[in-house]
Each structure stands twice: as structure tokens, then as C-alpha cells.
Length: 243
Image (tube, rainbow, N blue to C red; front, side, top):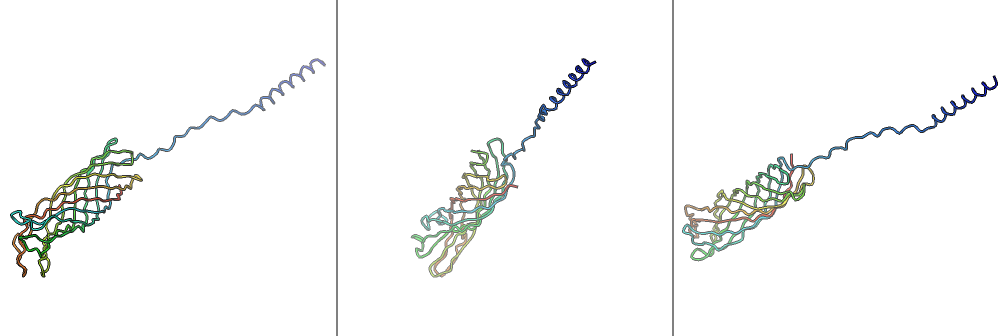
């Protein structure tokens, strides 16, 4: 009987010890939980935009009569411009294709004294009042947010020719002139909606005549201008919002 009690006690001690040892083992670590990283927005130039632009403009002009004889020598025509622009872009990989139009108020003007055989006391001038262009753009993305582009298309401008005979009020006439433009620039998008740009444009306007009927004045008639040529060199900056 005593042997059975000792054996039972030993068995209970073994079972208790095993249970306590099992209780003291560390609990298994929970399985890791995996979550997807948040999706970063993909930068794209595709879309339409509106903006403002402004800068400096300069060029050359002169007056000539109906037979092509110079009334003045060439003179500088300089000023500034400011306006708005609207366009759309489509991005394919690192290339961009776009259309852009702009309309600017211009303060570009210049003048010179007439030369013999015309009245050398008279002054003839050229003034550009507004300028608009419609252009295609072809660009390459040097980085996802920095665009280099070439651009070209048509141009239109309101160009005024004026003549001031000695002692007489200035005589003026304005024509809408058409022409072409070509240039290039760079644009940097500092957010997915906002970008800044700088560009150069050359604009050549077509020939146009002024004062088809000579204008009589006390100092003598203002003769017909067979042509008042004008070109533009434009350097400007812009700020665009893509919507």
C-alpha cells in the first residue's frame, strides 16, 4: 500500500511539473500583418490649362512709299507685353504634344525722321497695340517635371503707322496684320497643377500698306505707305494652372 501511495505521488508531481513547464513556455508570436503602401500620385502633363504671361518685345521697322522707296531708315521698335494664354497638352512617355493660344496687350513703338526726298522735318513711326498667336508645341521631358519644347504657328497683331508732319497733329492708321511665329522654351511643373515657363518667340508680320489715299495737311500730304514692315523678338515668362 505504501508503494502505491509513493508511485501515485510521483506521478502527480510529474504531471504537475509538466503542466507548469508548459504554462511557462512563451506564447507564440502573432503572425505579421502586411498592408499595402499608399499609392503615390502619378505626375502627368496631360490636360488643359490657363495662365498669364508677360515680358519684353523688340524689333525693327521702317516706312516705304508705294514704289518701295524708303521714307525712313530702319529704326528700333521696343516695349513690353502682358496677357493671357490657354492650351492643352498630351503626354506620351517622355514626349509632349500640345496646342497653345495667347493674346497680349503690347506697348511696342518706335519712330524716325523722314529722309530726302521726303520732308525731313516729318517723323514717321510704328506702334504695336496687341499681339495674338496660335501655336503647336512639341516637347521633351528632361525630367518628369521639366519640359523643353519647340513651338510654332501663326500670329496676328494690331499695328499702327503714324506720321507727324512739322507743326501738324499726328496722322494715324491701324491695320490688323497676320504672320507667323517660331520659338522655344522651358516649363517646370512644381505641382501637378501649377507650372512656370520662360520662352522666346520670333514673329514676322506680312507686308501692309497705309494711307491708301494721301492725307492732305498744311505741311504737305502724308503719302501712301506701300509697306511698314515689322517683326518681333519676344522674351517672356508665364504662370499656368492645369485643370
